[in-house]
Image 1 (cartoon, one colour):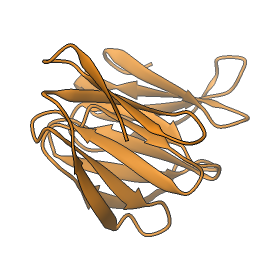
Image 2 (cartoon, helix red, strand yellow):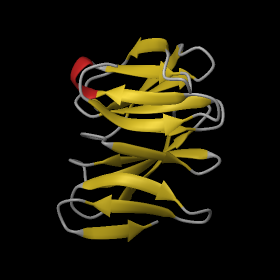
Image 3 (cartoon, one colour):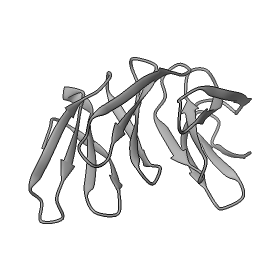
Length: 147
């Protein structure tokens, strides 16, 4: 494993782990064997699976990285707001919480293009999709936002 494993995601076959201190993501087989180690942006802190790709929120480089789940190939790195700690997939779009921008961005899962920016309370941190709405934890204000 990398240094300071933090976030974890499942792609239907394998486990992915974000290693914050060495700026990598590790792909693990279900038996725990390392299948790949991929370098990404600074301080990867959140992971999401979109059905084909793993998305990584890179906290200190203010971007997200898209990795092909099959082999870990970097498919793109896309700018977002300041200090993105978490993201989620809603079946069509990637939603990214930007902790220091106090907003959430909606990205096209195919192209990484920003499709919208939505205000949140102070310190949006993690994101979840419930089938109809996007939920955001707001770390600094002790609230949750529903989009």
